[in-house]
Amino acid sequence: MLKRLFRPHPTREVGHALYAAVVEQARTPALYESLGAPDTVEGRFELYSLHVVLLLDRLNPPEARVKATHQALFDTYAKALDHALREMGVGDLTVGKKMRKLGEAFFGRVKSYHTAFAALPDTQPLRDLLTRTVYAEADASAAPALADYVLAQREHLAAQPIEALLEGRVEWRPS
Image (cartoon, rainbow, N blue to C red; front, side, top):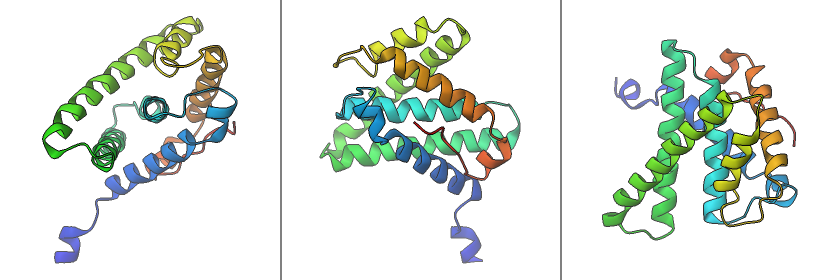
């Protein structure tokens, strides 16, 4: 009985697997070398968030199991942010405030990406968003190329069977 009580919930495991795939993809050297994303704390936050948004966008149908996986991915992402703050030496008393700011920033990004996706085939809103976020403190000349990357990843994710994602298997388009 105790084994059942403390056994990880399958959906939580899927959230961890999907987030691990996000981390691996967001660390792809080409994003930093070819597309000029800044290799800074802020730049990495933006790329992790971007890839989480892409998966959340794909996990959008309202079916219950999809919603649970959507939530598990977000929960894993939030816990990883909390852990990263603590590893960077942020004190327990300020972690909550910083997490609130990061949460607001993330939800702002989600809304902005959804707005940019709704404007398609016009890619200018997506380019502008990437310039303001990913390239906020860097040369934004690669923003159009990153926009192309985002759209290609979004299309590639849309072609994947939802069942694969619900099992924690995601395949990113090669960069």
